[in-house]
Length: 324
Image (cartoon, rainbow, N blue to C red; front, side):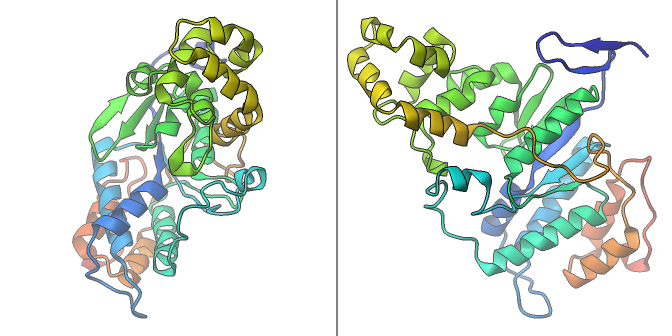
């Protein structure tokens, strides 16, 4: 089979169309299930199961719609101990810690993904974004386009030609050009943009007084933060309101801008599980899934849906009558 290499990205793979690799920001959808699913069922010890049930339904919907043969779930395990906290202790420090009731359900959701034969990505030092970025690099090297299932704007920096980001809840999908329409900058400029403007949701400071519009304008002129800082002497001469003040702020807070960019940059060298192969799904463990669903009090209809949405090449038959 002939192979083509992109001169822009170095992506190598079959010259024809390839099946996409779906990389799911699973923690986002567990949190949404936690907040959006009523607590109607508890486990045998009285712990709530609402996030698990909501996430299971999300997985059913997603897998039924995509029938993807390559799909991985990325979870945040490094909630307060990732490498960014070492760089900047205040990173995400304004967020309340996850309650124990939710932590337990995260573990259940990981187990559910594993029983379904889905690659589960989690690491004590890297966030889900980094695991998705690292998986995307590996997928592209194997010749696959990537679909990132997430609403997180930071993910735009990962999009390459042929890739998409999918805000599943809103039913919106966009490629690299859609990043410009949404954020005012190109996909490869997202980290620089957040380094200048900051990101309150992650407690990334940015440069005081440089807002989103100014950051986008400066990057539109200079292309990158590095070039902007190299040519800072030119900024006061720009036909831009407050140009001199912006130059002064950038000079004073140069180190904060560089640190903020580092915090906003998604790492693409995080470790992935042994045997990870472009997120190819395994056959589900029907008996293990049955036991897990019994323990988590997931009903027979959802159990059957979970098994039946496996790709045809890996589908397994239910092990017990209560799947029917």
